[in-house]
Amino acid sequence: MIIQIDTQSGEPIYEQLRNQVVFGIASGKLLPNEPMPSVRRLAADLGINLHTVNKAYTMLCDEGYLVMDRRKGAVVSVKPTENGDVEQKTTKALTLAAAEARCRGVELNSFLNQCKLCYEQIGGV
Image (cartoon, rainbow, N blue to C red; front, side, top):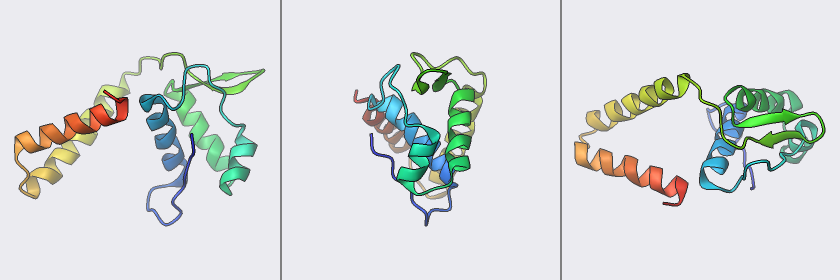
């Protein structure tokens, strides 16, 4: 999986990195037990600070997407652990997206179809 960072984006680099790993897992580009590059290597490859990569990896471990193995380093989790915040975060993100869509006059069925399309595209359904 190729990770690309947009330095012109208003989104913090650690969040871009975190989000791309989550998309990689959801789309099957990153497989369970697949080793991730070391923090130092990924930082060097992307030309970013190693503390930025470490912050993203820590978030991914806390959220259950990665696990740390003393011998292998960071590896993709076999199955992300249940996290009570997932439903709350999803609801918050969808509520904001729905509010923006409604403000711009997007019909409910169109919004729901777009949500379904995005979900299916990520998972290859």
